[in-house]
Length: 431
Image (cartoon, rainbow, N blue to C red):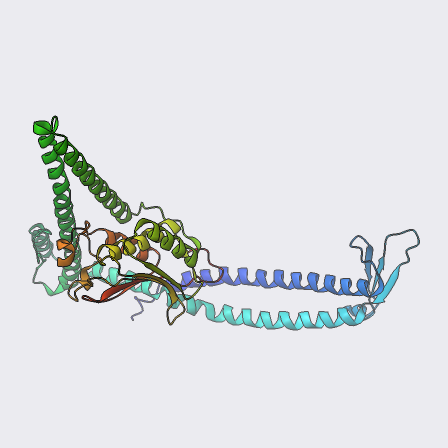
């Protein structure tokens, strides 16, 4: 690094180090003063308890130092007097010299060690802070070198024309200038274009899938409405069938719209998230009881191998587990068992397992099962198949909690989906 490129972070690091060291010094002094006060008060309490049967916090108290000599000698000759309340109370005087002189020496030794550590930090703190600031300094130097390059007007015109011909909606659209001096800028722009194209592709697919999912219930409702208009006014069979179909499809559309709104709010950062220390065993018991009450076609088993807790939003986490339980019920034959289990992994983190004995998931579908609107062939052929958004919502919730999924599945044997959450840190109230 040349003299001209000498790090500019040195002066900033010195100022930060000076500020931090003064704060540290005042903290040391304050802590030692508190130690002197509470240590002396505790000794006085012990001395009073040794001479007074009924200790009284409102006694009169006083210290007397020696009359002459050094401060240490005056401490050696000190005494402590206290007078209990009462008509015939007498003043008690005890020798405080041994305690005060010894305590004084200990405080001096402690302060000397602290001061030595403080001086070491003063000497090494600037270099340590400068190491943390080095990435920022490197960025500043790189920007200065780029701005110092002498680029003629033709290079800027070529760059402007190349950027003007880019269409981010076209696959594999890239900036190509063919100039070595602009290679770094070209790579940065191409990375940005790639991210823009991926975002554009996801948005297009999301809109297409959402339109397709909404088109079906709307078409069904319109069809039955037309049938009601033609024949349903007089035919009770048509009337009942149409009303039932319209209610079913409107409920499906309501669920779909709510799921779309949930994901949209999550993507925009507007979804409310209120974590608290939550008993996972209590939550899993509630889900188990609700599942048995709602679904009589499947036996539900509950295993609580640990009494884990986690910092979680109780409503959101319960929603994620319910999604897994509903999926297990959809693809498990009637009479087959569904297991809810709470355990800890090798690292001690809490895990919630939802394990079924259903149709299983094909290996090719497992990597895509949490994608929005993705449904495997088995799900599409199933009468109970949903919109393909439930697992996407569960994935968003679990990732918001800092957790992850583990999936083990075998076709015609069953599936186990596990939500693994981070273990709560002591003294932390947030994730």
